[in-house]
Image (cartoon, rainbow, N blue to C red):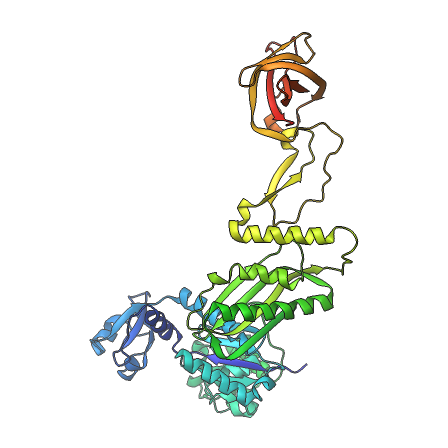
Length: 499
């Protein structure tokens, strides 16, 4: 399979990123005033990047700050932020997936995009390069772009060549050795009188390996056809994804909502054709200012119902920051499972879908931590037989215990009461304390032993449970903890109510 790669170099990325961020906050930078970024280094601070005005005064990265100020007293400086530069460049690389499905970083100033089979969407590779140039011009970013059938070739042509479509391998021969060799190796090569890539290509590989190690020879082999290292994109494209772009950016939530509805419908058609249901959806908005806004939703159960899925987005679209407008929207389903077709007239599939839709709406409004569902637990201790889980999670497949007498509601904290019983092991005939009254009917006992293997049950006592009806009609579930004849007399507690 043929491959084509687009390489974009941003030679002044750290400084231009800082200026763009300052402009968003209303600050102004004069391009005529020399400016540089400074990083800590051994021997004192050194320049990490310079703008054209500083470069015109003879400054360059690597100068000590003291020497730079001596050469240019009006120099303005700002601390360098390599981590922030890398994170922002990764975000910009994802924004560049408008030209190809996968993108990755190359060094501190390069972006490489897989454009195999994509150039025809712009009328060919020349049209694609023109679109790239126009986009980065709008962003105010200086750039150089190249297209080749190898990532390394495109990177060299963008950084050291004329840019554009690489005409052939021979076009690289006049380029300097710094394009393929590390800085130390390039200096040694120049001492030996080797200044161009073409001169290196004519040398025996064994000679280069003996003198400079295998890295230089490996890069030359890649230029001539050897296999490149695996391409590792920042984010692999999802199997199911759709996207739409517009000649004019969308700047209102109403426009985003209409576009989102269309995208959801398109994606659900793809899912239906593949017999899949979405577990998670990700909406990505590509802004005209090079920013990306994302919105993720997760239905309570696998779904490909466009109305249901769009309703999840509609409840959250107002959280998106549109900035200066959105020119491209993409929707993908990164997590899917098999979802066969259902016959609506049989079973309770329609009820399950309706319940899932209700859960999703409640979660969107109230938050996942406030919408819960009961789930059975494999235990015979009543207080532990049910746990509450977020309703958006897939429910447990464990069975519910049936056929046992249990109250409608358990108290959060059992009520201690005093009980009068006619027989040691018999039910009480009267209660006093927080709940008082004469018992007119009783059933039981049901003995429930503690789970002795649990550390918290080491000191627990056996319990005998009774269902009691008082004279006023109230019904309680009452437990006698402990046995008669033990050093500590039994105690009575009410655990729940049947009414």
